[in-house]
Amino acid sequence: MGGMTAAIENGWAIDEVNKAKVARDMEVEEKKRLLVGVNELELPEEEWVPVDIDRDAWIDDVSGEEYLDSLKEFKQTRDLSLVRESLKALHQVAVKGDNLMTATIETVKAGATLAEVLGTIRQANDLPYDPFDMVDNPFGEGA
Image (cartoon, rainbow, N blue to C red; front, side):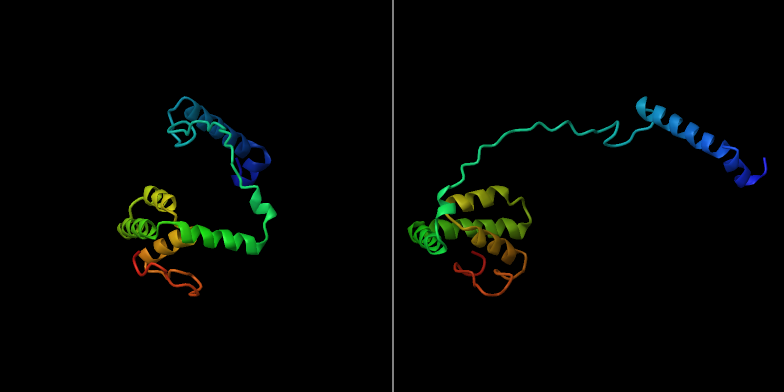
């Protein structure tokens, strides 16, 4: 035939590649060749679920000072013992390396802030409570 150069020039190489591709596609389609996610163990089509978000419209209309006042009021009116206990439970779950979802939800329901939740998880992973070392854990180590 004259080597690879001649095979490419006369089209034989391209024909062989195309034949191999058709044969492979047939094997995949007939499930003689399994490809995860293509013809085996495929993920079902996800269904769109509309979610109504109750966004606090007041947040757009308040000044920074008003927002801080509302945050201070929130922190003063929450049950600190409940927050402390839920943060301790979250810390223990994070130290074990277990799934954090349930403990995180319970901690937020108890009135912990996002910063308190994240700081507790960071401490459980031997990181500082605050990544910028500007804030100490108000509930103490492991709380």
